[in-house]
Image 1 (cartoon, rainbow, N blue to C red):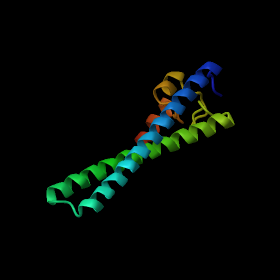
Image 2 (spheres, rainbow, N blue to C red; image 1 turned 120 degrees about the vertical axis):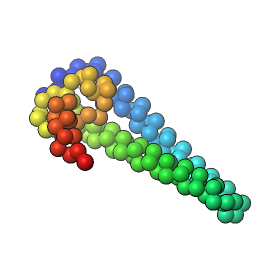
Image 3 (cartoon, rainbow, N blue to C red; image 1 turned 90 degrees about the vertical axis):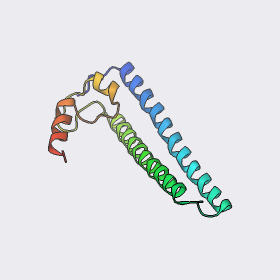
Length: 126
């Protein structure tokens, strides 16, 4: 059972909404930058030399990693919104206990209490 007040839920929801907007903006910016780079290459031909190609590949890989993380963050927010709508937000999916407000302030999409999260990470450590 969650122990969050209406005000706390409203604050956490605002935090998630703002993060959702930032993540989508970043995804759109990376996509636009990628389109611009492809257009530039089409106009100028192939990359001038190997160094330019390597730099382009590094930038693409970095952009890909950023977008992957942004997409994962958006998915976490969508899942948290679903838990909120179903009345399960702020409740640990493993033990059913309330997730501390302080934890949710640090990580509004948390689905586990800190104890269960540590255990989950220990079990799934690579």
